[in-house]
Length: 108
Image (cartoon, rainbow, N blue to C red; front, side, top):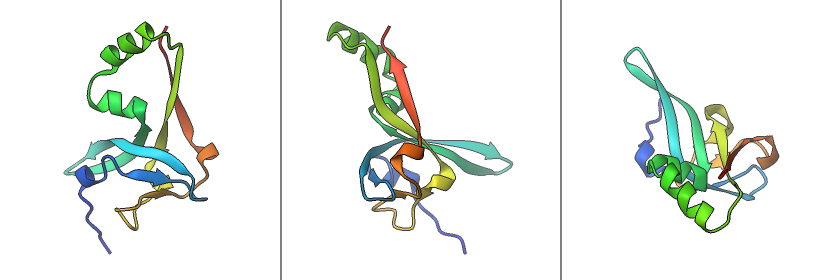
């Protein structure tokens, strides 16, 4: 059975882990073209992903440096198979938050 989901409607949706704990919002979706199809590779969740989506990473870093920030730890990379989109209005993880690869960026 094929189920169609409009990816643009997932952007900004709050994601919960398998225990119901909030993880963050979907801010970016990465896909790779294979033939005439696009396959989802991963979802990026959190503020880092938002800056990346808006192509504002350099501007964001400059602002954070001025505010004295040293490290930013506000995002996760979710492999496609770890995201449960059975209910696209309430996306959730198929794993615990601790199992995800966290995105870390340094302002220095």
